[in-house]
Structure formats: structure tokens, C-alpha cells
Amino acid sequence: MTAALVLQTSFLGDVVLTTPLLTHLAARGAVDVVATPAGAAILDGHPAVRRVIAYDKRRADAGPRALARLAGTLRDARYDAAYHAQGSSRTAALSWLARIPVRRGFDASAGRWLYTERVRYRKAEHHARRLLDLAAPADAPLPRPTLHPAGADHDAAAALLASAPFGDAAFVALAPGSVWGTKRWPDYPALVAALPPELGIVVVGGAEDAPQAAAIAATASERVLDATGRLRILATAALLARATALVTNDSLPQHLASAMDVPTITVFGPTVPQFGFGPLATTARVVEHPGPLACRPCSSHGPATCPLGHWRCMREIPPATVAAALASVTRDVAPR
Ligand code: SF4
Image (cartoon, rainbow, N blue to C red; front, side, top):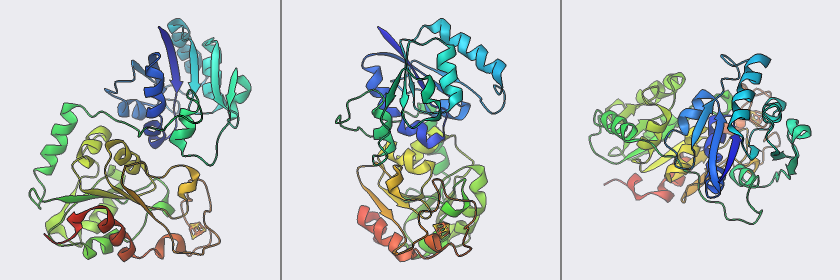
């Protein structure tokens, strides 16, 4: 039986998008993953993964000594091949120091000079597809990403929903946050005002998204449950699985919904789905500035503030357009 190591220490959404690659590799043998502590938590209980090795590259494991220590641990495991889903020179050095004989990564990655095999980075493809390219033929079908919340995650989601002011009515999840300020569509409160009053609303995200949740709750507290900062990521995925649909920015919850196959509306502002990070749920819609808007896209992640000062890419997306996209994916937005 072969043993493969996947190195994925990028953003949490990228970890979700790596799961098709993990599942593909698991059909051949054991798969271990090096991930950040937060990324490791996302992969808890994933059946394709034998072991997740947490690598806290910015804090506890920062510096060359920790890198060498981890490389020694990986060397002892005698992996047959390493797959670089994250392309830094640091992770390339890790698999090289671990003496893994086959080290495969993208030809566009910073660490490519240490790989033994380089795979073409297909810029026009979805990132999940690009990652799958590391092990599968270019024409292999792309399965949806997958996550496996534990029973305790489903219980936590159910317990939180039991406290919702809307009882057991159908609900839409909203994810108004993003690390990058310009990716936060500002009109979630107006969207809620445009939705049928019978529909429940659950705001998901981290504790840092509480201000956006509070602004939404201020518009309709009698039907809004603020779940920000109250569930771990896999429990949030479990909660999303119960939602009628998710409206989100270009951020992690979109990828959680893809994995749980929840109808998804993604609002793109300074970034575009052509970067390869759009929704992969069976039913999904993208809402963008009606255009033309020559400055868009303006960066790969979206800047903290609009460099032109007007932030038209987000401010000019009408709530009615998002509401219409939502209505197109679920009948629950019609009054019951
Ligand atoms: S420069 Fe354009 S795309 Fe970038 S944040 Fe401003 S309005 Fe949006």
C-alpha cells in the first residue's frame, strides 16, 4: 500500500477545495495531510484522510528548527509521494528535507525548484480542479468537495437552532463576513428586509463577523439568529446543511456550502469567479456588479479598502438582484 502526503497550509477554503484530491488519492493508499491547526480541524473525520499533521507555521512552529523537526517526523513515515497543494518554498523544503522521493507541485509555484514533478497550473480552471490535477488526469471529472461533520457537530448545530426566534421555520443562512474588507457586500440588512417575513435568517461566521451580524439583526431581530462565533467550522457546515440556501461573499462559507451541497448565492465584488473560487454546490448562482466596471477585478484577494475610494463593485449590487437570485434557487423565499 502506498502512502501519500498532501501539503495544504493555505486558507481554509483551499483546504475544503483540496478534498476531491484527497478522495482521489485515498483510492490508491493511505493519505496524510500537513495543514494549519485550523485547517486540520476542517478535515476531522474525513474518511479519505488517515492522519492530519498540524503545522502552525506562523506561531508555535515558526522558524527553521520547527521545520527541520517536522521534516524528521515526515521522514520517519516514509511517504512515497508528496503533493503540494500549497506552493511555497517552505513546504517544498519540508518535503525535500523529509526525503520524499516523488514531490509533485504546480509549475507556477514558488517552491517548484524543489519538486521532482511539475504539473501545469491551469489558470482558467476551478481551483478544486487544479488541485485534482496534481494526481488525476486533466479530463477526470471533478467531484464536489466533501466534509464530514461529526455527530457532536450536528448536535451543536441543532442545539443552536433550537434557540432560534423563528422556531422550526425554513431559514436562509447569510455569511456577511470576509477577512478582506472590500469583499464584504454591505447590503445584507437590506436583503433581509426584502425577504418574506416568514423566513428565518441565520447569520454564520466567526466572532469577528459579529458587527455585520448585529447590523442584520437590527433590521429584523424577531427572525434572526446570530450564530457568528458560536460554532466550530464543521458545526457551521452541519448548520448550513439544514439551511434552505446560503447567501455569502467570496469566502469560506461558500466552500462549506459547496461541500454540504447547499444552494448557494455568492456575491462577488473586487474578485471574480474566473479566479477559480466560485461555488460548486449543485445549485449555485453568482451575483456581480452589473457592469461595465473597468477596475474590476482589482486584486486576487480583494483589498482591505477600495483603492479608488468608491467601492462601486459592491455598493452598486442591488439587494433586489440578490433576492431574485435567491428566489431562483429555492421556493422557500416565497411567503408560505
Ligand atoms: S477598485 Fe474597483 S474592484 Fe477594486 S475595490 Fe474598488 S470598486 Fe471594487
